[in-house]
Image (cartoon, rainbow, N blue to C red; front, side, top):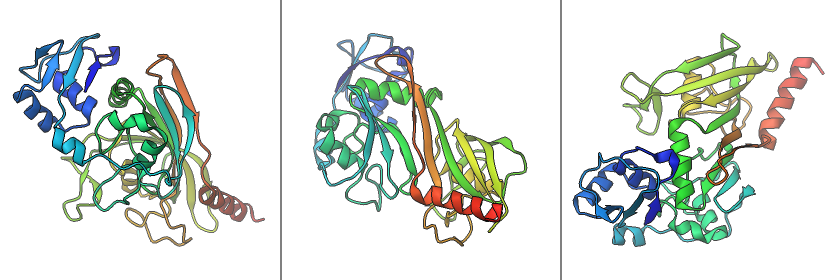
Length: 309
């Protein structure tokens, strides 16, 4: 895999760039560097701490056996909406229940499998397990995510994500209402020691910050609120964990919230807005998505009940 360094990655460490390019872990990249498999401008990289510059060419020799064995099989039966497509990227409006990429216990057919069926060139973009995937949404979270069609776009978009230039806002319905109409939950998140599949607020976790705004509050048939949440970071289950921490758990969230009294069947969380600097045009672009029927049905139910109609 060979890519030229864009402006967004100027002065970054070469091991971090190689990891972003390939989707491989930093430890695997370190092994490749030790083996002389990472090249910068036709010279073997001898230390991962070396800094790259705009226009540099980085070449990574992928582990052949792992790469071939882990390639995904395209699946044209995977259903999803691509609301924007250009030569650099695809913006997906992900439906409820679709897993983004393979993982432990996940479905054999994921968004990644469907992307390869619709955009075959993505097979060589990033890691073979997550081709073109810039960021992810939980299986039961609906809404927007961006995927890259070229390695250059993947590098650029992942750097935007890391530098927090990419903006992502979510709509959610929570039980109760936060004490303040607007606020920020700034609390580190890590894996629970008791249940490894759950995340929790913990002092030794990774930095995590969620901004929220209360849009509507209802009192019938139960106390609940419609919130907009904007992410500064993108930790696993971040919004769900943070809202639980301020006693406003996401409605329908049986993992971090309360029992599901309305039989919603999933956490009511929707990725409604995303904006970023386009890797080709260098202009900011923005995309919007309306919540799905179950979400809007819950909103209308609360509005009708609270209005007394």
